[in-house]
Image (cartoon, rainbow, N blue to C red; front, side, top):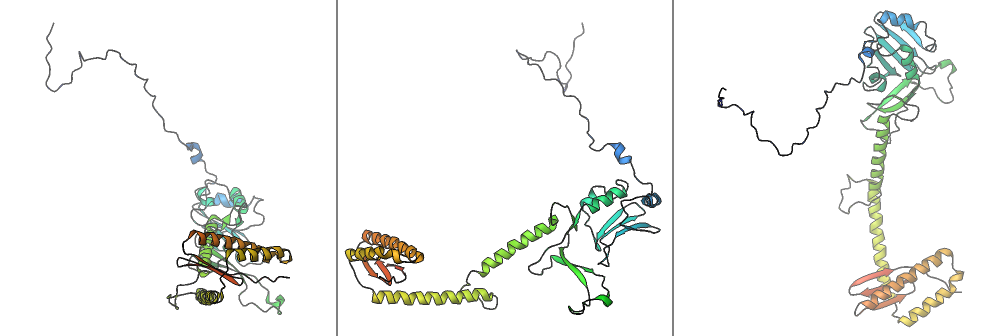
Length: 339
């Protein structure tokens, strides 16, 4: 039996303390594998060998009967024309690297359009017939209708084809016959048939509507008395003048009511109220409603006057005023004729 010596710095492995009740350890997890979302066989599949193969297979397609095919050395151009416009409505350009570009009335689609991202903008991942079908299934975005011209939108002008010999002279000869759209710079141009506008134009229309409402709300408020005239809208200045004139008229009415008011007691006030209430059948609906509201207001003012000390109540049948501890409450109403 050999004697074991402890080495300096070594970790002990024998005669280690143990728990009185050992718990079973959970089983070890199995090794995980990387899940590939796209199989490798799909990436290796190519629909065309080159531009020559594209040109050869396009000739036998029946789905592009309405398209004009133009073959060049380094590209193939497919155009779909409209009789009234000089620019092609839809244009598909396939270059010699099998990359493609789509334009709508001369405007190119943005780089992040779904027609590009779906197939990685390469004819290796989509056929010409499928791409043409996807393009024709979408609608051309009509753009936005701006309430004011800003730098956020750009005019999209499409020249028309007009025969000067058959033009209508009565309406006047248009020097530049055209159709014009207004679009944001990042408009998608093509949108799904379920929506009238693309997402970019919808967001711009929503924001412009909010701005227009906020502006209209600001214009409906009177300006400050000391607001500068040069930087204030004329509508707000007009409201300010109207407000000042109205305050002046109200002040004159208050002074007239205070001057010509008659002091009556509570019993006489109730008698007058009952007399006019009995004649409510001959009133118009508007006058009857107005009188009911005046009675409610009078009752409220009377209760407030009773609650306050040294309150004085003045009633006049062309107006009423209650003075309670330097607080003036005025109520104006129309005269009611008694028959």
